[in-house]
Length: 143
Image (cartoon, rainbow, N blue to C red; front, side, top):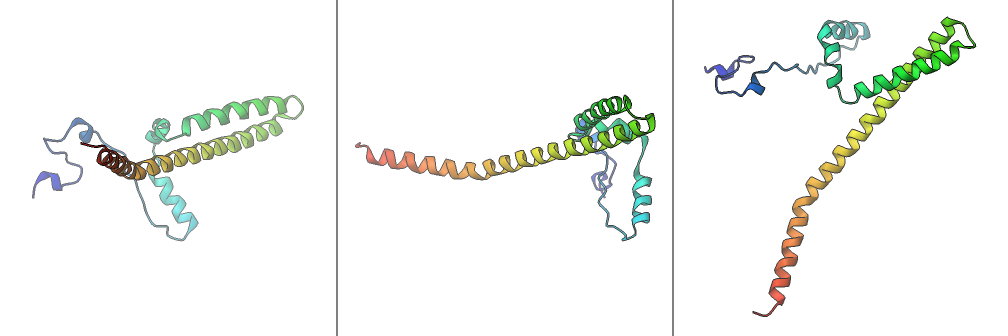
């Protein structure tokens, strides 16, 4: 058995990018119990996850937008209400704006992926169409 068949042990002929440790993607089935699923999800969290939050598409911009909005609403609400009420408004605004802007960003990314997929699918058809037009034009001209 070669060393390439052993997961996690890089071959000597692999590039530096392949040797770099990658974060595994876990796809597990739900157990049907909300609390045991939550416990399993909590076991997978680590402090390294917070260091990698910038790698999540749209997360940085969504969080920064939510923080700015939450602070703004919290300060404005704090001018007329108690600090407890103002902090509730700030937190609710942060959550709503962060989730909303992240969702819109994800929709935009998905729309762009669909456009790219459509272009990739249409490209061979356009090449064939252009080739057939070139062939028909060259066939019409006298030799």
